[in-house]
Each structure stands twice: as structure tokens, then as C-alpha cells.
Image 1 (cartoon, rainbow, N blue to C red):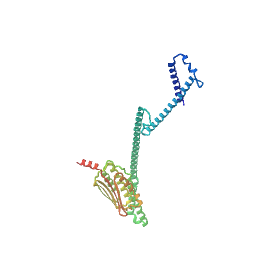
Image 2 (cartoon, rainbow, N blue to C red):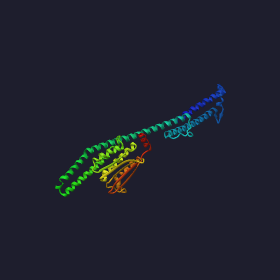
Image 3 (cartoon, rainbow, N blue to C red):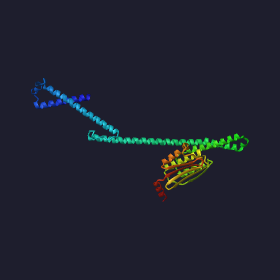
Image 4 (cartoon, helix red, strand yellow):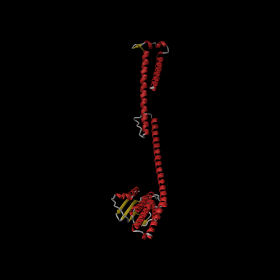
Length: 349
């Protein structure tokens, strides 16, 4: 309201000044020539009063019209700024401003868009870095738990197993039958606990191969496992051509498969195969354990769903065949990329 009154009064005095200037030009500086302004009457009012009233009304109209235009400009400018903030296009037909202001708004829009993309990238990078930090901490914690379990619980289970085995071999003849059976059952429970512990330690191993090839990593894993389990392990490992990420993933699949075999299969023999045939890497684990029904819901507890998901993540397929009392076969097939085969052939030549 104050702005409106200020504008109206300014216009009114400006119009008065213009009118006085016109009269001065037309009638000269003599006051007698201006006498008609207050001697001539219309509607019982001197003509000077009518001129002043008309100028006052005209000033109100001009001030109202200019305020309305300014308000419309403010609304259009506010809408344009909202469009810039929302990254919408600025409609030229609805935003009547000069070209320089339009260009400034477009430049501001591009700047805001660039800054927004930069902030999104920083946010994404921060989230990725946080995930990497979390994964590193998880791996470190798993390594720590594996060391502690191996140095304490695993050693104690081994000592208990050896002690029970010695008792059953030496002092069992002098014990009643029910005591003998109890000792045998206890020894079996301890041996099963040892297998569970070894499977758990296998799960807690680091996922990465630590600058080893997949063949070297699997061979080291199987050699170490052969020294700790009672069943027979056969394996055939050939060099394959996979990306580093796919090798790490397949190594983790091998860990989970061997861990599941230790915990659930009750096998006496295990065969592991890693070869490359017809542009496909084939990884197969076959045991002669108790097996399971593939349609049984309890198969999920066998831990094979995670293996299937990991195989899909690296573009492979997973086939599981199991027959109760005959064993289980887990086979992973991964296509080898043409570029990888070409690079390998170039390096050989």
C-alpha cells in the first residue's frame, strides 16, 4: 500500500508540473492570462479544481496499472525461478522478460543442474565408499573370528575327539555296554562338531583370492581341507579365463558349496572339477552323501539358494541334482567373454 501511495503522489505532482509547463508556454508568465482557471466554472467548480481532480484520478489509474504490471512481472519471475529450481524448461511465451534476463535465468538453470549432478555424484560416491568400508570391516571381523575359533574352540574339539578316541580304544573293554554306547555317541557328536566348526571357518574365510588365480586359490583351499577332514577329496583344476570379479565370486561359491557339504552331506568322497570347454567355464562339485529331495522345502536350509543367486550375478547358470542316499551334484557354468579369449590368445602369440 505504501508503494502504491508513493507512486500515485509522484505521478500526480509530475502531471501537475507538466500541466503548469503547458499553461506557461500557452499563456505566458503574466498572472492575468491565467485568471480564467479560477473564474471559469463547470458544475459550479472552478476549472482549475476540475483539472486537479482529473489529474488525481489519472494518477490513481496509472499507479494501479503500473502496480498490476509489476505484480504480474513478479509472479512470472517467481514462476521462472521455480522452473529453474525444478529443472523445468522456462516457457518463453508465458515469461515476458527481456532477452538478457532470460539468458541469465537459463545460465542459472544450467548452473543449478550441474551443481545438482555434482551433489548426486558426491552422494553416490560417499555411499559406495561407506559400503566398501563396511565390507572391509566385515572381512576383518570375519578373519578375527576365524582366528579365534581356530585357536580356541577348534583346538579344544580336536583334543576332546582324540581323548574320546583313546578312551574308546583302551578302556572301553572294562566298561558296561550302555557306557560304551554313550562314549561312542559322544565321540560322534564331537566329530560332527568338528565338521561344523571347519565349515564355519570355511565360511569366515576372506572372499577375495588375494592376488591368486582361481585355480591356485581352490588348490590351496582343497589341500588345506584334505588335512582336516576324514573323507577323500578328488579334484581336477585347470586354468580358466574369467574376470577378477567373476573369479572372486566363483571362489566364494566354492567355499559355500564345500561348507554345505561338510555340514550336511555326511559324504565319504567328494569330487571337484574346474575346466573350460566350448567357451564356458564349468565348475562342478559332486559328493556321495545323504542327498535330499530337490522339491523339499528343507532344501533351502542346504544353503544352495545363495549359490544360485551368486551364479546369476556373474552371468552364469546353476544346476543342482540331488538323489537321497546317493549324493548331490552342483554345477555352475559361466560363459567366457570373447574379448577375454582374444586378449588371452594375443598374449600367447
